[in-house]
Length: 201
Image 1 (spheres, rainbow, N blue to C red):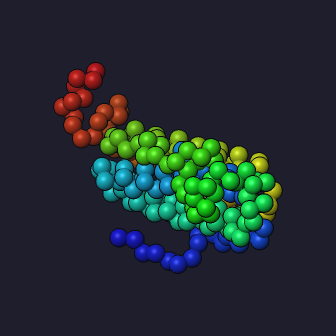
Image 2 (tube, one colour; image 1 turned 90 degrees about the vertical axis):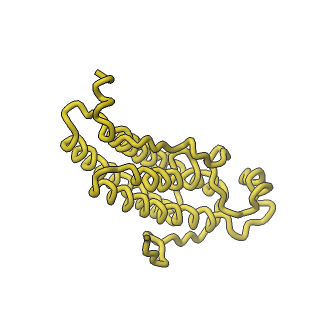
Image 3 (cartoon, rainbow, N blue to C red; image 1 turned 45 degrees about the vertical axis):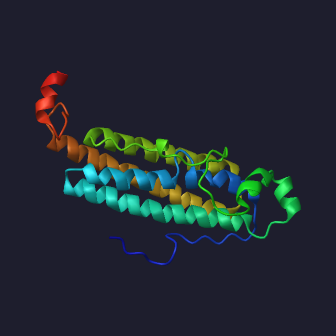
């Protein structure tokens, strides 16, 4: 069960709408390395995680990613509020507008809708934690790219906060992977069916 506090993890108060920026930032809502995929990845992987500390880690980070999804949604919404038809056309926001008006829809910056194929839940401790480490780095790189393209401080500050959290998550998953490898045998064999490991030698 989750306890929901009705405030964003970091304030989002954007004064100047900018649909071009919205098209960039939305990738962290529903793109291949975005917050929706992160939350679903970790909250799905936790069920097969045999160690309580790591199950808790996946639950905590997966829940925090939902809060990050909320922040990205707020950024996209505030960047597209009260647009005129001329602003929509000039920014190239018309293709998105035709399908979604200014509703926040999970897609990449390229306009590709979210798909579960962006995530993986394998049920193997080492595989899943390694996936998670890579996912956090890919998200950090996406935030780096957004910061290269956006100069509005009202957008940059929450994006910089989110980027910093990706680094912290990467560090926590690194600690989790070390804990897991310490608990498994030295060859990192499968945790759930040791007799199967004999056939993998």
